[in-house]
Length: 255
Ligand code: UDP
Image: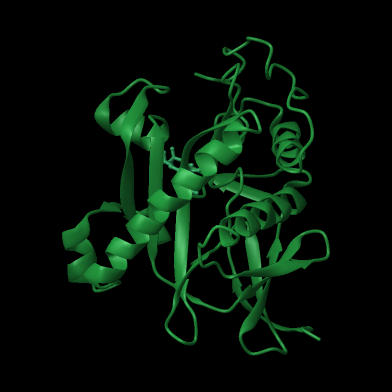
């Protein structure tokens, strides 16, 4: 019956539990939020439930279009059931628009379009602050073979190609996002972890209003409302509920 047996892992925003089905885990999404390498901490009310449901919507959408994911279904209102995988310690980031660390690194203004999209690899290592690495580092670290690394990058670009138009129909611009992948018991590589406003930058298509974790990182206010609005739009609602969103007020947090 997939009853939870023991805690396998606890991260900043999630807990992963083993279940009585060997290959199935239950991922519990917390309201806790951290940023700036853990130096900033807080809670965002309702975030766990939103991120679980947003991830479920994305995983279902992608799975329906040929992307292999760990997602099996929702359990309760803030937990996902997923295939048990060993996470490959790489964060694969895709960028359509300059923001965050890319804007800083290259001296690009945030909002500058990036074409073609840039794929970046970061080593998942909290103690090192997840450093940016390249193909040579991946090889020397032996965290993935060349073929696997190439597949991760191709899958990340395919995910981007699917999510950009999907989100655009919801009035959201996909600025950038981070993916993680894992190997299941059979060695197959699956898209894993989460896809949510914690791990994607999403701007309102009309106003540029930020509807993602940057509201928390940068103390922009309206964090919980922005997360709820993303979920509302993904679940098919209308697209104008957040204060500032869709009202031509890009300064309400787009810089
Ligand atoms: N990201 C993430 N986890 C991380 C680092 C980044 O989910 O540990 C996401 C982030 O939300 C954004 C994208 O990856 O959508 C690119 O983030 P960036 O490198 O600009 O880092 P940041 O500015 O967040 O430090």
